[in-house]
Image 1 (tube, one colour):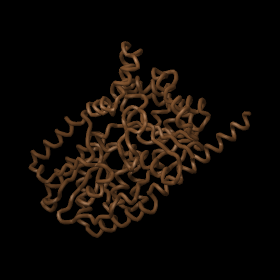
Image 2 (cartoon, helix red, strand yellow; image 1 turned 45 degrees about the horizontal axis):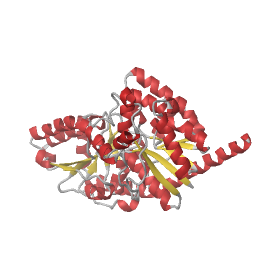
Image 3 (tube, one colour; image 1 turned 180 degrees about the horizontal axis):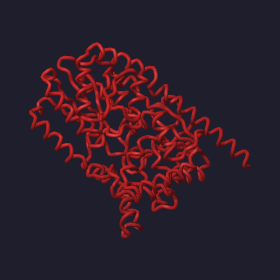
Image 4 (cartoon, one colour; image 1 turned 90 degrees about the vertical axis):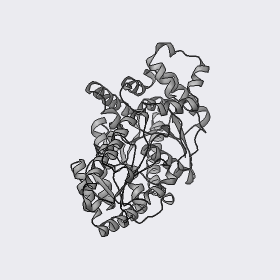
Length: 439
């Protein structure tokens, strides 16, 4: 089967769970003998799971579409200028400088992208479709998230193939908008959902959320958890002397980075935990630096900076070394997440979780037995739960064993990719049957 996975690049400035999911599935499909590729939009891809970067053109270049959306002067820019703004060096520079991950100021762009051929990116859409027609001719196109739904109708009609769409964390982007834009975008996404043959949510929790928000019928919704390439994650014994707490995610407010720091300060006020260390990884964007530096100042003020380690290498191939340093992992995302890939990575390495009872965290911890939950999601509650877990080495070891076994049995790409393939095959067969009936 020929599969094209259309994914947003992100510039590699922070840990991106959605990107790991897409690259993991694509590599797994290739390993199973399918002709699969990732087609980047907005920004370049990075090397993950053996999927090479810069081997395919970048469509909807982030700089080009921003300029065209916001400045009349650039709406008819010459091709040489488009190529310049679409070059990898310019796009990488733009990714490091700011706001592609910030909703503010991109509300109209979001609406325009969801409007497809009726939006300001109609030329870019046709360019992408023409590329697929001539160079790829896929059996199915898989969109990385529902913010790309504006592509679906024209791809489906012009290529006469089914379109699948993954669902993961779109609400983080849309719900950051004001009430006016929130309603407009959710309504538009619900309308565009009619152009898709099937949706694949990454958790039962998120499937339920998106069925409600996007009015997706049950027969279109499928749930496939995220898988990891098991050979990349080596087993570790949770460290006990000294104990260490880890954080792996983008370092910013919405992912609970402030809660993490405050909880560590509070934990260390108890002399029983005076030797506990803190290991931080996941990177940040330019927008995050001010907030992150404020958190670091709190650590320094409390004379804890010497017990904190910042690990800047968060490539998949290096993560086993990161987890080897930990006793447990926490990422206290303020409102929870649709999944949280770092959870199964941590469990695959034998490191238990302490997570807020929010989003899909409950689902993953209850399924794996590899961690504990706390509530409410405050620094005080997190510090209290850390103290409870760190005081019980036997429980830590049991959670370590439970979590690793569950992930290796149920959350590997070879197992979960088969479930994605089953969705592809069903929608492809249904699509062809409808075409025959129409003829």
